[in-house]
Each structure stands twice: as C-alpha cells, then as structure tokens.
Length: 80
Image (cartoon, rainbow, N blue to C red; front, top):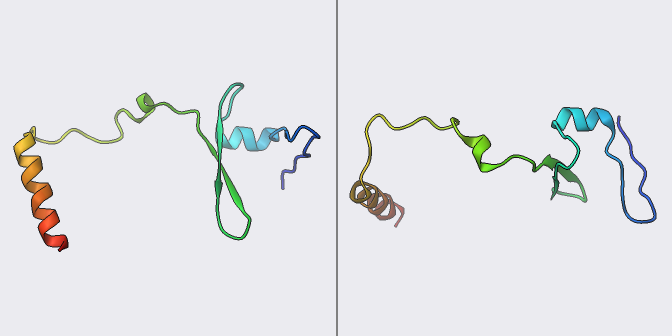
C-alpha cells in the first residue's frame, strides 16, 4: 500500500506508483471526490475535452434540430 505524509503546509507528495497508475505528470491536476464514510477517490483531472475526440462515433446519418426536438418531446411525454 502506498502512503504519504502530510506537511505542515497541508501538502503531500503522491507516491510514484500512484502517479504512474493515474498517468500523472508534472503540472497535472487531480480531483478529490468524496465517497462515503470519510473516504476519498483521487482522479486525474489533466485531460482536456480534446482527449474525448473519437470516443463517440458519428451517427450513420445527420440528425436535424427538428428531429432532436421531436425526440426530446417524445421522451418527455413518456416520463410523465
């Protein structure tokens, strides 16, 4: 298990094995997400929106704004 010591300034050094697992590099940001019972998750927050490119494939055919609005209205009607 990796451990770190808190300094008087409230700082810690993230252990090398944790940095490697998170893919962190100098200057990267991390987020602390509060879980239950006083536990926190550390998440690398160094990715940009451009890193998401390619995760979602393009639709087979373009969809118009009107078609989107109709689909939203249909889903809204189902939710009632």
